[in-house]
Image (cartoon, rainbow, N blue to C red; front, side, top):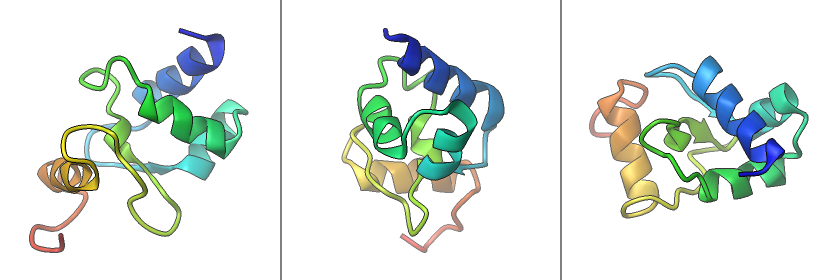
Length: 89
């Protein structure tokens, strides 16, 4: 794992608790990694059970998700955590 991956995943793990989200741009600002790099790192997250990349969203919506059945899985996880109200997906 690269130092950029460690920095981004560590920051996500430490600063975005259950039931909350952060945008790609906010995570980029917190880590100093460009937002496009954040997306690539989320897509290659080797430990999504420990570092929940579904909590990283686009500024104008949910954004993408490479786990499970894609964005549908992201919606379900965010609903389970109480971030999205049931029925809006």
